[in-house]
Amino acid sequence: GAVVSQHPSWVICKSGTSVKIECRSLDFQATTMFWYRQFPKQSLMLMATSNEGSKATYEQGVEKDKFLINHASLTLSTLTVTSAHPEDSSFYICSARDLTGGSRETQYFGPGTRLLVL
Amino acid sequence: EDQVTQSPEALRLQEGESSSLNCSYTVSGLRGLFWYRQDPGKGPEFLFTLYSAGEEKEKERLKATLTKKESFLHITAPKPEDSATYLCAVRTPFGNEKLTFGTGTRLTIIP
Image 1 (cartoon, rainbow over the protein chains, first blue to last red):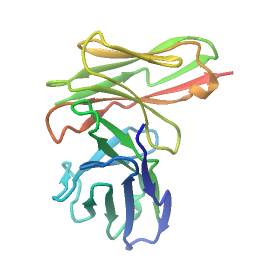
Image 2 (cartoon, rainbow over the protein chains, first blue to last red):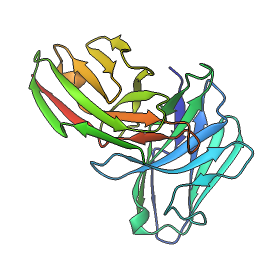
Image 3 (cartoon, chains in turn blue, brown):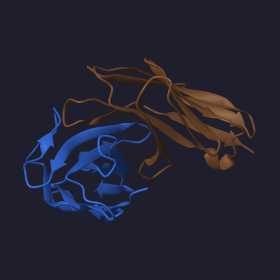
Image 4 (cartoon, rainbow over the protein chains, first blue to last red):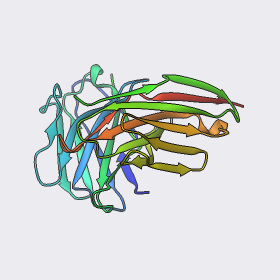
């Protein structure tokens, strides 16, 4: 299957600082990537859809100015958590849509980034 | 609104004891039902995609089936390494064709 990487795998930061998380599709091009957030023992909650060359689409209740998304190329999307606070501590996971199968596309997930805000 | 419900929430089996996980869905225009496996602290790993009622797919000890209202993930003679959370998700033509996930079934295989 296709491979998606994330960097960093974990990060600890002080309250008020900004943190950038990278998501890369390693062996395929992804015009669309997705960013999820997952709390302990809960399922994945979609935060936003990242489209290459255009603005991201945010889910209801997700602050656009707090979670900045940039999809600068067909293999890279970044999520920046601005002015992070302890309540932003979570497991952030990206996925990339592999369209090589045509209409039968598949989303492949990265390994996740654990963010802890002190 | 699309809804995905998985049951049971948690399942403990003895090694070799076969069972099934259920994923019930209510969507407008299904364009794929996905099964993923997630280990603690990791991202979901793709297992299967099913597109139409009656379709079946197999991989090692796992077999996924699909009807018009639900999907089953059958686990035959499981091993401890099959312990994980199994997530079901549906894709529809709406909203950037995003995936809507169920809450998952946490499977534990006891040696």
